[in-house]
Length: 159
Image 1 (tube, rainbow, N blue to C red):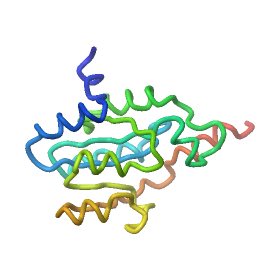
Image 2: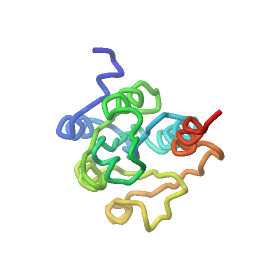
Image 3: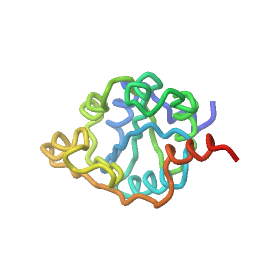
């Protein structure tokens, strides 16, 4: 197994790993289907907020429940997680299959919760919980013209 594949962890293993991190742990989550520059900017900005970055990745069934369309996700959950694990900004990747990442957030107890600025503070799952524990919530500006949904639409458009 390569060193970056070792960043893929089950929740119990991620919790044990998190206990050994010295410094603030940052958490973000998403589908991360068809990784693009906007994702990279978000992940790098998130990593800059602490000592380690944990990324929660929606499992395939969870993505379908989000209503992103019948052909989503484009890439399977294991492929999406593996690509994220290869990024230097990412220290740990955990798949989740629930509607929201709340159980992950509570188990991993991040010090900083990061989401894209397309989410209002009120719509960030776990924000109140993280702040109640003395943590911070950070919203990262979006990179214009970069979204997976727009990319999928361009790929589907007739030439």
